[in-house]
Amino acid sequence: MKILAFAASSSKQSINKALANYAASLVDGAEVELIDINDYEMAIYSSDRENESGIPLAAQQFYQKISEADAIVISFAEHNGSYTAAYKNLFDWTSRINMKVYQNKPMVLLATSPGPGGAQSVLNAAITSAPFFAADVKGSLSLPSFYEHFDVETQQIRSPEWLDKLATTMASLTY
Image 1: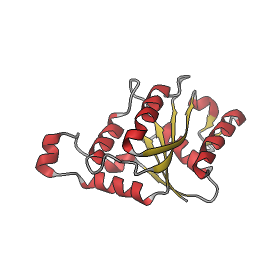
Image 2: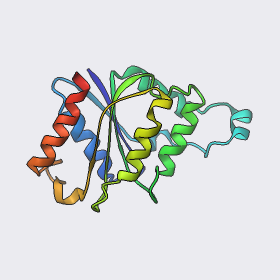
Image 3: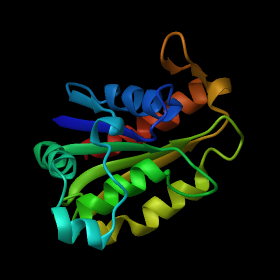
Image 4: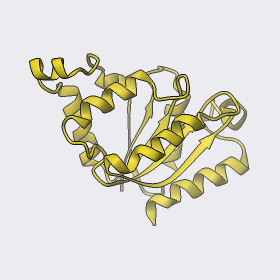
């Protein structure tokens, strides 16, 4: 199984990128490709830009990465209760190629934050909208208080309770 994993965050020190990478590594025998959405940065979407210049190559390349994957793991950062601007823009451009952005791929949606909310608002938004974009969400998990439960040095969850919850969520990709 080839898993495409990424954080819906443009932060170079993204805790969501660490979580996505670690979560994907829990799937036995999977080949994990961790991408950085900063590599797909482009001008803010507008219909005027699309009419003038077409769909940027970066959006096409992102769509192709999804096509090549057997499964997808996304961990969402939350900005003011919603998606980050970087992710939303990438998603908006990619949806102009095909509204079925996620191409019926099995997915696990995650979110984390330093605080006790665990970016639950944006995760709920992602789960709710996923079916409209051909996402086959197999599982989801919000990890609250990231630094309390995740060891940044070893890049893994230190809390047995949360490790069990994450492993169970990730196992949903193989059912």
